[in-house]
Amino acid sequence: MAHPPDARPAYAASGPGPDSGPDAGGGARPRLLVLRALGLGDLLAGVPALRALRRAYPAHELVLATPAELAPLVAATGAVDRLLPAAEPGRAVPRTLDWTGPPPDVAVDLHGNGPPSHRLLTRLGPRRLLAFAHPETPEIDGPPWYAEEHERDRWCRMLRAYGIDADPTDLRLPRPDAPSPAPGAVVLHPGAGAPSRRWPLKRYAAVAGALRARGRRVVVTGGADEADPVARLAKLAHLPDTDVFGGGLPLDRLSALVAGARAVVSGDTGIAHLAVAHATPTVTLFGPVPPSRWGPPGHPRHRALWHPGPDGDHGHHGDPHGHEPDPALLRITTDDVLAALDALGVSDAPDALEEAP
Image (cartoon, rainbow, N blue to C red; front, side, top):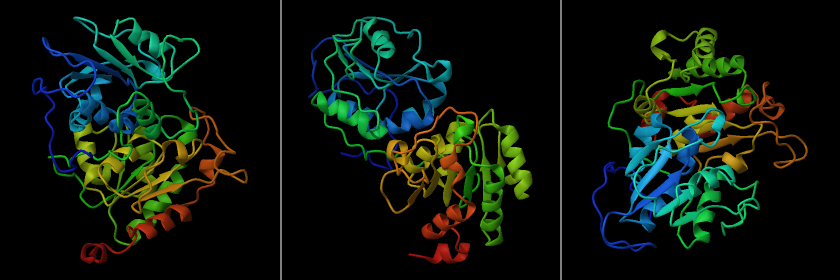
């Protein structure tokens, strides 16, 4: 059952109740530890699995090991009782977890396919560990890992192998309480975790110019370490300071901006997943990794642009951490993006959009 999109979930534990999941028992409330110490997009791609675990273990305290700065969205999932801060540079497996008290009753590896993440959890001595199989950790009897699988489907399949029903479409987050700082604007987000996933700023500026010529408000966002490209794009696009949100918006304010946007245009990065979670239309520019791995769900409000070349979807997999824009990404033109926005109705005059049914 999907989480109600307009409900505001409680973050604090509400106390034990009847538990239909495995390992139910009396006494102190049992604890379930989930490891996903990754980024914003990773957290959101893992929401269906987290909600499946919440349903399967309703009496457990569900503890999520993930970066502390993701707390507002962790709370919004409605699936997690407590966040255990955990992060390591370069998306690596944390060396340790600040776990106290008895071992977890259940530990779930949503971080990777091991063995480092397997061993991190094994050292805590859980009664049960749910994870993918790996030849270096033969004691874990999990399902096989498929490299080409979509991220949302992957973790739901793993849970289903353990008898836990999981729906990869259960992605929606409730609308933020805070108002948007730019309601109805088109959000351009030029940044990404590596240069290989960053579309050229001049092309973003051309998109901004075309949209503004049609009466659309355009705003630019960027992470805490992306002030320079955000400023350069704002200058190229002649945007006023009021439409520049550089330096890393607090996550709750970014969530409100995205939820109230007319559309989000970005590379394959966390803000695209945030827009999907808030049912905001997206145009996502893929390269070097194809949308079959990280793309939005198949819905008319989302457009995934991907030009891998003559060999098709699986013929090109570049380096997602490369130092230059990937050739597949560079094949996406400004006209491609504007056409995708036209298909979403975003390029229409604002008055026409507001009157549309």
